[in-house]
Length: 256
Image 1 (tube, rainbow, N blue to C red):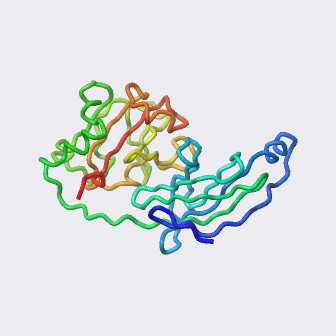
Image 2: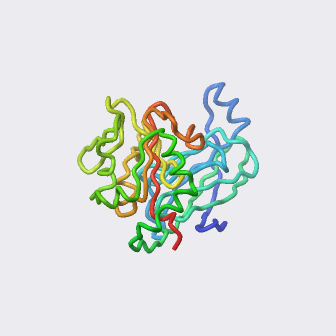
């Protein structure tokens, strides 16, 4: 079975019978379903850390390093899913979820091709105005890194742009890094172009911008330590809302 996504493709689905468990688990199985599977690219290589969301809700799962994901406790019936990953076109598909069973799917994503030509400083403000960046900056909540500042410092890595942000530390471990609070107790949630990336505090460590966006792609950044003043639309996107949120805007939002 093949169902075309908005800009990608959803390939194949088969049902796995729910495994019996204890009494509470059996009662849940009798009234709910699940979705699991793998996200791959056009060459059938796993797409790591893709975000799989149930419709427009907050129910979601993040694919692991092998591209695999699982969603449990879903309502039965026809359900819309969306799959997003920075650098790929989003995929939308519907699945008929049977009772007390898990549907296995294979989702194929297509890489987004962008010509990131040099951006003139005189052109940079309008897209950010449309998303409220300058309005929030004027309100004085959080810390803001503007296109002009990024042009001036020219970071080598995306994480270099976060130097000197209070209560934010770039915790580097080998080739990996993550954004954590100054006491190293928890990770910031990272939202790129209005899409939550990974799950802070989970075994899927994807809060590092270096894994997801190049320094050349950076357009503007908002940082909200402890989520003070964070826009309401970004609340509830992380299991660690008390740590803080980093909102990254990339040059992909600039009209070409």
